[in-house]
Amino acid sequence: MKRILIIDGITGAGKSSVLRELRARLEASPEGAATHFIFEDDTLGQIMEQVRDPAWRASPTFEALEGVLDRMEQELAAVPARRFVVERFHLTTYALFPEWERLVRYEERLGRLGTAQVLLSYPEEQAERRAIERVDRMEENWAQGMDAWYGSRADALEAVLQSQRRRWDGLRRSMLPFLHLDTREADWARYASTLMTFWAGR
Image 1 (cartoon, rainbow, N blue to C red):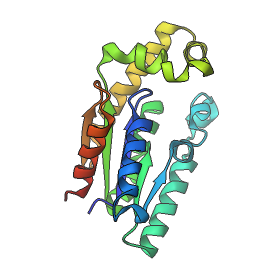
Image 2: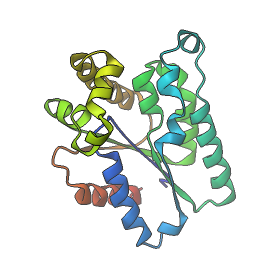
Image 3: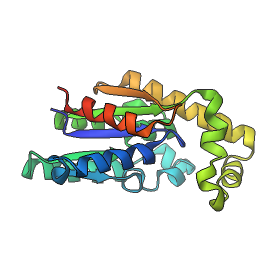
């Protein structure tokens, strides 16, 4: 039984849009009351800053992953019918810090809990528009922030593409069942419907 569904993907892949559609469908279904959503602020924690710290990279810790996993294990032990939808987890961590051997223990714990993964992606030619020149984040100066964070537009674009490639690599290494959704058409309702069918399957 799939009790946990992890939704992952690079910036602009449509995680927020898919999660909104999925949440609306679940709230209208009998399973909705038993389903809890855990968002990326909880699963990522401070890793975006930590990966830039040489001391952390020499001896990395993943407090956010540990905390979320501990919570799910405890709640599922107490209420076996509970289900979780989780935004980002160890595929994102691997994309930022590509040492899979450090993440295997999370795979094992997730597998025991009944976890499946969903990877959202889009063609590389859409990366600049969807990940950097985001019309939904223009008021936040998103593109300028991305350029500044990575040093240039070219470096920002390469970082986005590398992040997507690493997620694919992590997915190939993973033992968890998965679904891939190509979101190039931005058909969020259809993707949510596909997710619901996948999650209901054995």
